Structures are given as C-alpha cells and as structure tokens.
Image (cartoon, rainbow, N blue to C red; front, side, top):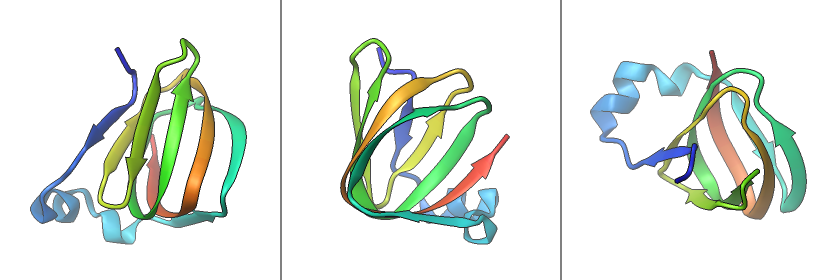
Length: 90
C-alpha cells in the first residue's frame, strides 16, 4: 500500500489550506532520488509525475492533485511532464 496520499481536493479545501500562498516549485522532465525528512503537502498546478516508493510501489500524480508525502519517505521522482506545484513543509 502506498505511503503517499493523493487526492482531488474541492476548491474550498485548497482555500482552507491557504495553498495559493504557498511557495511554487518548478522542475523540467527529469528523474532523481529524493528523501523527505519532514512531511510535504503539495498541490500540482501543472505536470505529470510517477513517484516510486522504496518498496517498488509506483504512485502517479499531476495537475489538480493534492499530495501528502510522509516524513522518512525515500523515493525516486520520474517527471514525465514539467511540474509546477505549490508546496508546504511541516
């Protein structure tokens, strides 16, 4: 079972979280290892990504998804379509 949580939030939930005030991160098509030392919640404005968790589980995410990455997660990001996302740590 994936550790990453992907959901399609209602606009009201995005407002409640204050997503529009979070910083924005952009990244071109690429593949890289990543480790989360703290929780990250992000909202994808653009892009398509497949994240492979350490056990081999693959989770797809992209435009319109609100994603929670748990602390301690080791994974590989495989960006299929350039990403633009709001993000919040902690």
